[in-house]
Image 1 (spheres, helix red, strand yellow):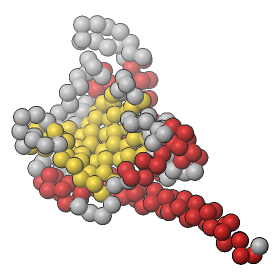
Image 2 (cartoon, helix red, strand yellow):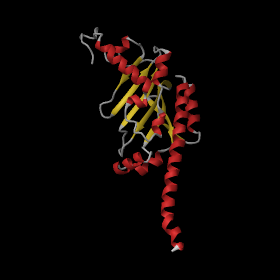
Image 3 (cartoon, one colour):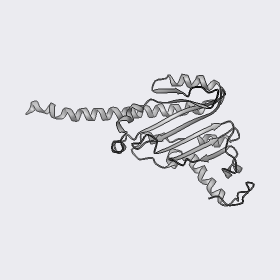
Image 4 (tube, helix red, strand yellow):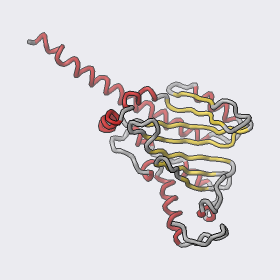
Length: 241
């Protein structure tokens, strides 16, 4: 019987060893995600960021992708932690649920620059969480561009703080923050504040107030402001909700 103990406990040792390996890898890639955020914050909206992003993508733990020809249409150059291999293990909804309970919720982060006609016109940092699907179940992002395509008629609180706006997608739960050259330093800082503890936290971060706390406070304040300021100059006069 004593000789059987190694055979009996070896599967458990292997499983535990693999689990702790995944936990360690998750923390490693989360640290890479935090480092990527700091680098994206510091990028300038000029062509010097192209070489800087390429160099960043060559560093350990990252994956670099280019969007092809950027002369005829806008395209994206992207850097993200190279953790995609981990989430193949949790692609199915059932495995994703198991991973969530084990502190291994599938996630992705990326830092991008947008290029048009050979010139850098914007940068973005985004976070997404999966639940056994191809596309993120929830995502949050911050964009900095030279000029917003959003007008006060589309987002009326721009009257309150020029160059600082928020949008949502229709197909998934998303929250996007936009800042332009007109935005204040405080607004720029709030836009790129992410709570990346959500990447390793056992608590399920599924609220935008947890993922982007500073920007979400600003968004809620915009909602309160809109309730007391009628929207004018857009062909209608109403209170936004």
